Length: 214
Length: 214
Image: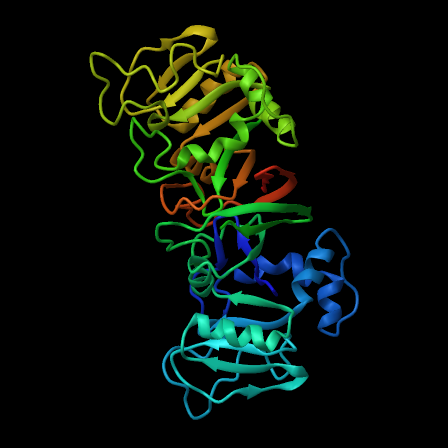
């Protein structure tokens, strides 16, 4: 069966976004620095139609992150547009006209909304009946490929606690953000048990892969 | 000049000790699990007079942790005995008659006390005039070897914030402790800046070395 996987960059002090997230600073203050290891890569730049870039030990990791995924699940905050019901001029996401997903994306929200089809094969579907339902729809849409959890932290915590997240690739960067969205938090007993399966040293980042223990 | 270095094992959710630390559970509930990668090593067991044990990618790391250190600094909580003035039957530490340090150890406390000399070359000195003074004394005692910061988290934060910590080797283990002593916390602006210099994959742990950026 296809896996449910998470690939996320975390500061050394545990944050996946900096403090004071806003429409202007979707990743919070200082949060953009988290992904420097990724956005400087040739593998990333090519996918965004840009030339040049680095090839290093992060390259195969980035290719894994960007490939083999048939559907994505994200929280409402990550899609953006603030809380509450969708307005008349509904927010079409942080991701522009041609989002980098190129497959169906399922957005967890309490507020129903028609699907939003954008260029390049990305359609946002708005799921109001919970994380299991979103996963079921994402699995069906992924057609045998993996389902990626895009975040944010709260959505990851829900899937991890429910035992629905199979694999995590955590990219630890040498940043101290001092505040923001903490990735590993709010776990109830029994806490999820993980096993480390791989660690990769790369310039400015260490990628560690974990799988869920039964 | 000799370096000031920290070697510490941290759970994936950022804790170096579990919740509810006590004399019975000095590392908090679940905290003992943090160091499984270390205590199963031949290099560790030999130092404690035991036979057998594993040799793996953590072995050189353990040898670095255990070697080349001429003095250690630790907080009062790590020495133990609870807060407040030392009683008549003064606590002689969690470390037994023959502590594993074999060099001078400087304990940060607000309560003066005569040095405590134990077997095997370990003498605990109690420093009441702050972290700079403890470092100065430790450097002198180390006679050119490195000074090790043993913890706890609060002491590490003080040295890191003051720009006095040169190098950190953080061993990240696939545990979610859910609470306890958080290592990277309480930083003021400007926050310390770090550079990753090495990452080592080993069974059940990833060792990442950072140096302080000026």
